[in-house]
Amino acid sequence: AVGYASLTANTTGTGNTALGMRALVANTTGGSNISIGKDSLYAQTTGSSNVAVGVSALQNNTTASNNTAVGQQALFANTTGTDNTAVGMGALDANTTTSYNTAVGKNALGATVAEGNTAVGRESLSANSSGADNTAVGKGSLQSNTTAANNCAFGKNALFQNTEGASNVAIGANALDANTTADNNTAVGFDALTANTTGSENTASGTYALATNTTGASN
Image (cartoon, rainbow, N blue to C red; front, side):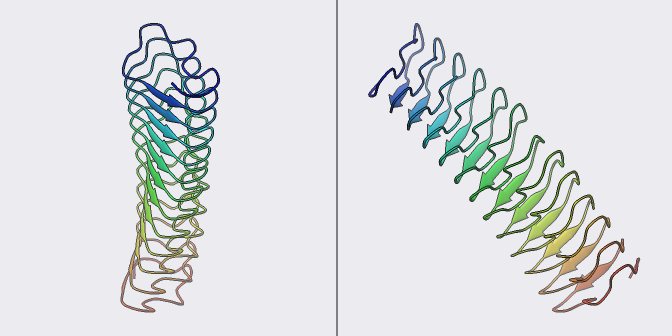
């Protein structure tokens, strides 16, 4: 332990590494934790096998285990959620008790309290609150998503404006980027279904495929 008050409350916890002011300050019996940065794993007591690198990373974690947070305030609010991975400033910073999320990129999954989401790219799934089992890869992909579940977005701004539309697949930059509440659409290609807002059950494959469709369904 290196740093003011780092690991100061430790009683029987073993295999811990704490570098930085108040790193792992409250840890008592938790073991095999790595805490690097001021106030990283600050509230940790009995959780084990957590990795926190960055100022205030996993700061509020108490009893949860197997989390990895790299970046300032990554997984900041997490208390009992397990098996989460957050890499990037503010990634998964609002998550509290949910598990099995992966966020890579600044503010990726920054608002989520849902499980089983994967976000790779700056601001990807950043507004997501309770939507579960979404996958977003690319800057701004599924950025506006709040409660929708089971969406897949690959490419810059894919499904960008989607809020409540579920079970959509968008592959390609700007694919389904205007979609808001429509469900069960598949768009593959640059600007595929780019204007679609509420039309459901459409399939578009190729650059600009169904690019002007807005509310039409079952195409």
